[in-house]
Image 1 (tube, rainbow, N blue to C red):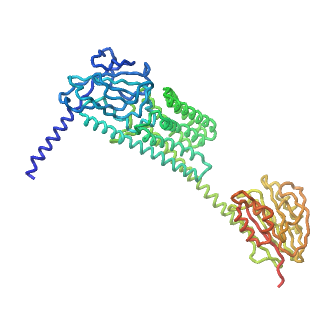
Image 2 (cartoon, helix red, strand yellow):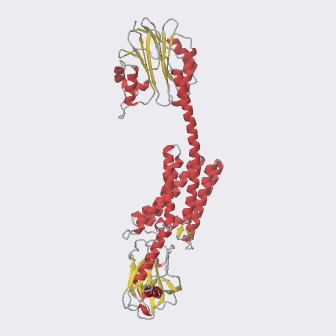
Image 3 (cartoon, rainbow, N blue to C red):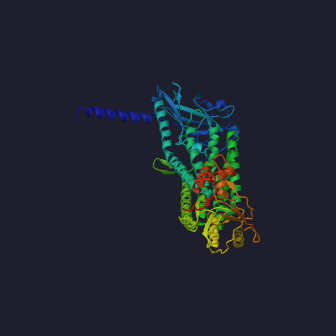
Length: 629
């Protein structure tokens, strides 16, 4: 250990001297002056620039420049003696323009192209090599020739990737040191943007949640609009990382324009969201959404064509939409929905923060970020995150209430189904002298088909089969009313029974109607049948030819005729759910196939119709005289 001590002391001394040397190897450029216009002679070190305006070093600048966008900067720096013989470099922070940089009148670096039109990739930290032997005097002169129009889009998502962070004046020093410092600035910029990237991922997560909620409740378009709002708020920022990190894509390529256009769409979907939350003012919000979309298209077109007018749209939207949202809050307040009002206020605060931050950038004021250790958070993202949190909480509460209502409705349907099963329940044993089989398969929890059989005092069997127009709970309630009427009906003649039933339901069908077929079977093989718009029954595969009366519930004065037949075969009653069964190709089961099926037992007929493709309630009831033992 003692033998290593001199070595450790030497190592520490070497590192300390290297650190001190590194500090001496950086020269700071001072005494900056600026002049608009363009003259190649302004790069020469002997130029008298005392009449030029005093300025800071070149920085990111959103404002348009005069004289065709040309601007020159000049500065001086002290050249340390130990620079001689070293491989020197020039470190340049990101500038949102095309530019050239000269040292002592010699071009040492270029970013993009200045003529005939400015063109460049995305701004980033760069290190340029200085020719050996260029800096021999005690004072060095630097000139930056800059032309506006190559980028100038600081408000875009394309500027928030960290490539342009950590502005600093041009610095001269050892090439290795300069390259290391510029890379460090670039890495620090990427670290600073991690918090913003995390917020963008949260936007995407919130969008996914919204789409899931919409998939469960299609009748709530606010979930869809919120999901779209979140996606266009987060996805472009992340896509911009790939676009701006490219060393080949022009800053005004179609990918850039597309990303810029999508970043403007949150205004469109937020207006649509407010329209869904406040139906009373839906048309106004729809008009605002259309206006925002048109403005976004023009702004993207302006950027693509380098017309420089996109800033005008940015100014307009920056302050127009907080005003719009203030009106939206008023509309939601009038609508008296606390959840919607909370969302509107959160959106107003978000737009206000965005407007203030954008204004700072547009006026070249210091746009302060929220700093948390090495991370920087754009306050616009914080406002958006707050808005998403509020909206998700409110919509979740609404979703929970909606699910509770749906659960209650499902319980009601289940109760209605059990009630309908009890009303339609028949004994497992057929009435004396007859074989009766009934199969009922509703298309939903409850259906609109019904049937009833009753053995009369003289040994005859009364059968009623019918179908209520419509489906669901309303149809089931009407079925219950019909079955209740049949339970107290004293008529034994099929035609008279239909007439009485028609008078009882007229005015109670809610604009619908009821088809029914009533038959009375006698032990000697006679059958009396009356029909009210229902499918005629079948026997031996043939449709019985009956006079068809009006469906029940249409006219209280409708009359019904009665037909008597003699048969020893099976009579099959069907509902239109069998006839209208439709396969995947859209083909109906139809009369021909149905006629062939009627020779089979009731369960097989119902199975065949279901297999073909059930779309309506299916009822099959067969009646035959029992075999004599």
